[in-house]
Image (cartoon, rainbow, N blue to C red; front, side):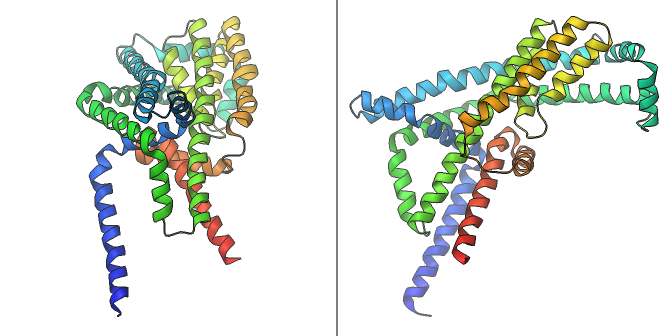
Length: 348
């Protein structure tokens, strides 16, 4: 083997080893690094504007951009998560102590159902109504317990959360200040051709903007409208229901109707027609139409992933990485499709 070949192989091997070692070292704080990158991409127009207004003073512009991220994203998210933890814990405790008697509510629902509906349920081999009732009560209790335990992680691991938040803000500052140079360095060092590198980097940026700017804003609006509607009609745990609606809105073919529709049907069947009609009207005419109205201007043609790819990759990402997965899952899928598209074009 020629000396130059040995040196090249050694360099590539050393590069891979050091890269794997760095990933292993920063893995405990991958969430902070990930969200620093996401916020740097989303707030880059604001940072560029600030840097221009401040006459190119990069440090001051970066500091102000970080403060904007704190007040616009970090503080509201922390407050909402804390309130969600308290509400989910309260719901679980109410179910456990039978203050919130779901079984009695189901009995009331059953008593108001027409006989032909009960006969239809029996004919569909869904089991007895008592069995459906027990499973539903168990599911609601487990779901509330799961949400409470997940949300309370922040309170139980305050030190780790604070360190992760500090890492995110620290990295975010330098991404704002040195982001352009870093992107240029990555492009220069990439073993791919310049057009391929630009294509993949642009795909990464577009997918982050499509997933966060588009999908999350739409889900937040839908969840907020649903939660406020539930609060107005007097439903307890309106915040919890609103958050669940928002999360479900992130998933194609699922949607917030899985939350508001059962409540609307329950109130209509049990005779509380005003509450049922309000929830049904808001759900059908507002929540369900927001996606069609806002997605084209917010997402546009940035993300061309098919709905089934978005659904599977989002669920898989959440399963593997928690809530960070709703960004990582579609992002990995988009990069996979982008790389294979480049390979297909090269072969053809």
